[in-house]
Image (cartoon, rainbow, N blue to C red; front, side, top):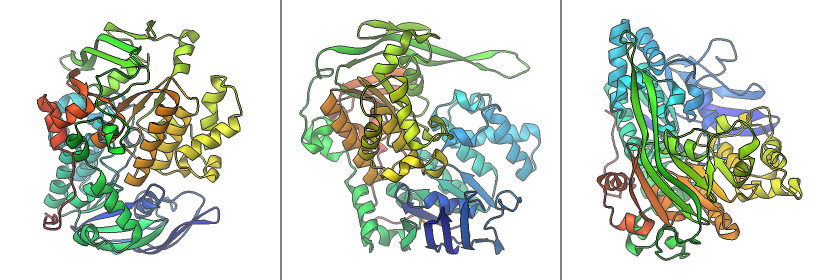
Length: 546
C-alpha cells in the first residue's frame, strides 16, 4: 500500500497511508476507534464507501486491487476476511454448516461429506466442544462469541494467502480469545499465510504479531517491530496506547481485596447486594432449554439446556458483573431478564411485579425502567436514521419530558462523540463509534436499571476508560443499577461491587468482586483469571511466523 488517500464529503480521513505485509508475516494495524483502521482494511479488500474519493495504490501479489469492488469485480482475490460484526457477516437464513462447507468445497476441492467433516474439525479448533451441533445451528441461535469463532473458521476455510482480521476477538471472553489467537497463529503458520490484524488490543497484537503499524487520525505515526513498539515507542500516541494496555490489570484489585472501584478509591468491600438493601430485579430458578435439529435422516431434535436453575438478585443501585465463557448462557439469561423470552421454569420479578413477555403495552413501564446496550451495535442501530435521531427515539417513544435536543447533545458528550457526529448515519461510523452511540441511546433516558452486554468491547483502551468513567458517574449520580455482561474482567473490576460467574447455564460463583478476584473458588473462575492477557516484558520473546 502506497500513499493511500481517502476523502469523504471533502474531509480527508486517510492521509498518505503506507503499509507493507510480506508473505507469511503477521502485522498489526493499531489505532483508536475512528483512526481509519477499518477504512484501510476495506481498501485492501478493494472496497471503499460509495461517495469516497480515493487515490494511491494497493497491490496484492503485484496486482492492483484498489477499487476492484467499485469496478464490479468483487473482493480482492487472495484475501480472506474476519469482520468485527459477526451478526452481519453471516447469513441468518442459512445454517452455519452450509456456510462453512461452501468455501471448503470451492477452495479445497472437497466432497460434501469431506467438507462437513473438515468443517467440524475447524470448529473444534476454535474451541467448540460440540462442533456438529454448531453446524446444524442458524447464526441467530449462537452467542456473539460463538458467531465470531464461526467467522474465524470461515476465513481459515478459504485458504487464501492473506487473512485480514478486523477486531476478531472483540466479542470473546479471555479464555476463548487466547484460543482464537492461537488458532490464527497456527493456521496462518501452517499455510504460510500472511495476517493483517486490525485491532486496538495491544496485548493481542503483542501476542500474535511480529510488527506493528500505528494509525492516528488517518496517518501512520509509527511502524516498527513489535518489541520496539512495546519497549521504546517513539510517538506520543503509541506511548498512550502501550501505557494504557500496561495499566489495564487486575493486580490492584486483587491486592486491595476491595471492589473493582477501589482503583479509583471510591468504595470498600461490602456485602453482596448492599447498595440500598432494596431488591430491584430478582430471578429465581430460571431454566431454559432449546431444541436444536439433529441429523436430517434421524429426524430428531437435541436439547440444549441454556439455563439450569439460575438465581440472581440486583438491588436498587447495585452494580453486578456477569462473566463467563462464550456459550455459557449469559445472552440467554439477558433475553429472559429483558422479557424477550419466557423461561421454561422459574420467574423474574421487578419491584416485586412479575415479568413475562407480552405482545401488548403491558410491559411499557418495564421498558421505561430498564434500558439495554446490545453487543452488536451495527445490528442494533437503524441504518436509515442519523445519530441524533437514534438517541432521540427512546426519548420520544417513552415521552421523557424536557429539552430533547439538549439531552441528545449531553448524551453524545458523555460518551465522547463530537457534536458533528449527530448528523451521521451508522454506516459512516467505526465500530467503536457505533458502540458509543448505542450507549448514548441507552443512558439518555436515565433508566432505573441498565443492562449492558459488552458495552466497551469495541473500544480502544483510552476510550474504554472514558466510557467506564461515564457509566461510573451515571450510576453514582442517579442511583441507577447496572447489570454488566463482559468478558473483560478489568472492566468488571472497575465498575462492579459484585460478580457472578456463569458456566454451562449455571451461576457457579457469586461473590463480592474484590474477594472473587483475590481468591477465586471455582475452577472456571480461576481459568478466566489465568487467561487475562499481559504485555510481554522487555526480556520476553516476540512471536515469529510459523
